[in-house]
Amino acid sequence: MPIAAGDRLPDARGTVWGEKGPGPVALSELVGDKKTVIFGVPGAFTPTCTNDHLPTFAASADQLSAAGIEQTICMSTNDIFVLQAWNEAHGAGHITMLADGSGDITRAMDIGLDLSGLGLGFRCTRFAMLVDGGVVKAFQTEENPGACAMTSAAAILEHA
Image (cartoon, rainbow, N blue to C red; front, side, top):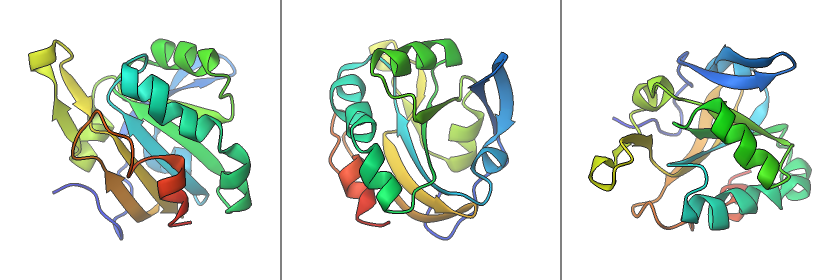
């Protein structure tokens, strides 16, 4: 069953970019006690993710901060090098990129998406969640992975 409001984040591990380059981190440790927005994309540099999803969060840093959001994390099953390049291309340095290259976090949250028919393999579905103290307060996903209405920064800010 997919992760839902009221659930705790899993201890599954991904990769973030630190001062010395890429390094492993448990999702629950990365979020800690902070009020956090996590949004997930099926793939960096893909049309909807690049043109619609990431830009809503890149342009909403002030609104997220005003709502008490202490950090914003973007998760994808891409590797950390691709995510960092994508983030730099959008000037969204305030967003922490979380690579779930092996799909461990995606599987632990039961939000996988099989895009093998398109040659993209196993991906995470498009989502946005509000987390406070490691507990999911709101979780939204798109029925159509090519849409970005319920998972935009504006949509998740309604729950902040």
